Image (cartoon, rainbow, N blue to C red):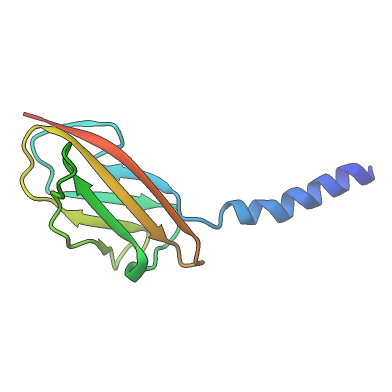
Length: 118
């Protein structure tokens, strides 16, 4: 009985720590997706609100050339959304590279790709 109590207490303490980071929930274009025609922007949706000054996103082509407009912003109506506008993209594969700081001061980062089809 004491072991069960200790295990439950440990679980209760550890659970909040696991949610203390802003993880990528979903994106538009979706991770690994193929879109037809050039999207106007990339939108990233996280599990926590972000610190705008310390959250970044960059979109690059297969050669590593930046193709976004460099105007990354956290949506003021949804502080868990980071977005950046895109130049017109020709067909090909693109990488989205992001690094965010959540309002609780934890940093996460990642990378994913999407493909633009004609």
